[in-house]
Image 1 (cartoon, helix red, strand yellow):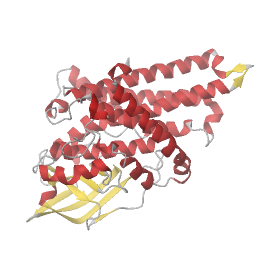
Image 2 (image 1 turned 90 degrees about the vertical axis):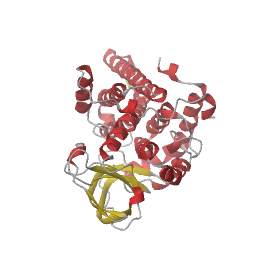
Image 3 (image 1 turned 180 degrees about the vertical axis):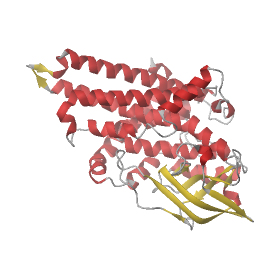
Image 4 (image 1 turned 180 degrees about the horizontal axis):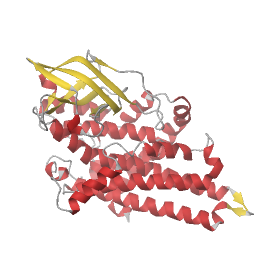
Length: 403
C-alpha cells in the first residue's frame, strides 16, 4: 500500500540513492564501526549529490525542489546501508529547514545554494546539558551589543557538530517564553570551539557532539527572523523536519533488519532444514515484516501530507513514534533469531540495534509523541505547525522535478 504514494520518479530516485549507498557507503561501514571516526569525506561526497537540498526550491536556489516524500526515500535508502550517514543527511536537511522557513531573502540567497550543491553542511543547535528537550528551559545567552550579538553557553547532542559549516543556534535574549532568538553561526567564528567528540553507543561515523560559545560575536544580520522567534523556529523545525526525518532513518534501519534476518534464517540450518522452518522463527519474521509494512505506511503517509501542505502534525508525530518503537521491537526480535551469532562484531544486527536506540530521543521521545497525540485527541492541541508553515512548504512537485 505504501508504494501507492510513489511516482515513477520517486522509484528512480530510490534506485539512484540505493546504488550510491551500496557502492560508495557500504565499503566504508566496517571502518566506521571499527574506529568510530567521523566520516567527513563520505559526508561531503553524499552532500555533493544534491540530496541535502531535496526540499530547497530549484529556482532561484538550485535545490531539487522534490519535497518531503523524496526526502524520506533518500534518508531511508542511506540508512538501510549506514544509519550514521542517514543521520548525517537528516540532520543537514533539518539544518536547512530554519533558513527555508525563517530566513530573509539575503540569507536564503547566501546559504541555500551552498547547501543545495553540497558545499555547506548545516546543523541546528537547540539542546543544552541542563534542559534536554525542554526548549523553554534554555540557558545559553545572546546579548545585543550595537550591530552584533555575543553568544555564551553550550549546546550538546548536536548532529553534524564537528563537520558542519553553519550552525543554527537558538539562545536566550530575554526572559520568558518569547525570549528565545535564533542565529546563523559560521563554524569558523572566533569564540566557537568544539571539545573532543564523545564515544557513542551507535551511529559510528556520525558527528554528534558539543558546541561551546565563549563571547562568540556575530552580526545582527545573522539573526533568523525577529527577536523572540527562536521558540517557533525550534518547535517548527522539530515537528515538520525532525520527526519525519528520524522516522525515515528508523525505516531504513528496519529494512536492513528484515533483510539481514531473512538471509540469516534462510542460510542457517537447524534440525535438518533452514532455521526459518521452525514455527517460532517464522512467527518472529512475520512480525518484523508486519511492523515494517506498518511503519513505512505511516512514514510515507505523513510525508505525503506534508508535501500536500495540509495539517498533519499528528501524522508526523505518529510516524516518528511508530517507526522508532517498531524498529526497536524488530531489532530485539532479530537478535533473538540470531541468538549468539548476533553478538559477533561481523554480524550487523547488533549495529542496527545500537543505531536504532539513537533515534529514540531526538525530536521528542515516544512519551512526548504520545502526550502530544493525547492532547490532539482531547482537543487540547496548541496548534498545528505544519498548517502554520504550509504556505512556505515546498509544494508536491510535478514528476519532472525529480528528473
